Image 1 (cartoon, rainbow, N blue to C red):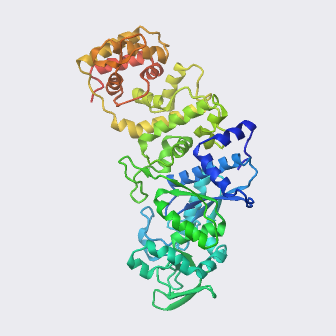
Image 2 (image 1 turned 180 degrees about the vertical axis):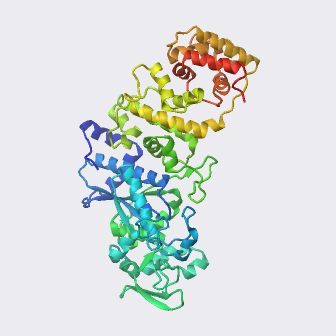
Image 3 (image 1 turned 180 degrees about the horizontal axis):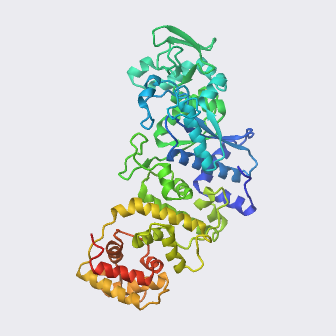
Length: 547
């Protein structure tokens, strides 16, 4: 990571900030109170390479990176840190993934470690696990994460875990005393924390141990062909079941911080206890909520519900996804296509506010955490929501058409002067084509609505061609206030009298745009153009828009 830019103002604000990355970082500092700092404070994230990296992988590494940065600020960048992305690539392939080219070709390798399963995708990777690890590293590198990669296969086989594995053999009964009460009677009868790799089939075996010899550092079991076999617990001849493996890894590596999803929460006490049995100190935890699909169901890789990372990044910038990961991590959130536009606009709203804020507010602003304390200065004269509605009204299919409207509305604003806006223009067109256009449904206005639209067109005609969004919005409100259906007597307008019901704006979007909602109508009409908005109203009144 680059050196943290610090100042007395930042250090002071960090000490008072209640942003969740700072709260987690303080737990790590408290962990070492009265103790010497280690050579480096170790942050870890885990990855199961049975499939390709996904949106949850991004979230876990991004959030951990935010805590790491907060820690560096609180310690004034005087304590070295490391982020280890650990791949559990020695796990057996329990089922064949759906996305491989030739599923039948992998059937003989079921239950073998992922790093011995042939790579079904071709290329120069020596195994399926090596291929997926390479995809993980490419994935993380694309986003510029600062991390070290670790392979379970390499760590087991190189002897990195040998000392703790020998300790696990010596304290086998203590580990079993933790694990057995968590299992049913049938599983208790055959359970062992050690999973030997069969010397004959190469498969990861879930078999009971006939003997665990702590002095020799070996385990004895019946191989798949019934032959009694003894293997060392060292050198990669065996691995640990996933729950003991968590605690073993923490103890062996000295992990200080690891976050995981709520589905691990009930097991956290098991991980901690095994870590302590093996002579380690359990790390600080952060448990985040899982994402839900649009129906409120848990997102599952096997079901394919919810968004993929590629899908999000097809329609929005990476920073908007990072914002979504930052916000309310302990709260379950729906992760589907409809959340993208709001996330995009919220990101740029936070970015715009940053320069106007005091340091205490800045350190609570998500963009400070997203950009490692140095958010860019970007002026965005048009919101993403407005761009989407502009695409919808104009049926634009390329950037040039949209830029015609934007440059007319904001003289001097071009694709060259505002490359970030140009990037959003491309995202807006793709999002509209794939998600908005197929669901657009125009309806015809009733008699009252038609009269309101005619009155609105006449009112807009009295405005100058370059009227801004505020002038247009006031014209819209003036028309709505005079129509009893749209008067809101619970609210008062600035000039006295009833306010305007939101039903009026809903009608405008349903009739003119074919959508249920949209951004501030005055801003949209000013960007689209007064004449163009009046032409749109004329089409609606002539019945040319309704389905």
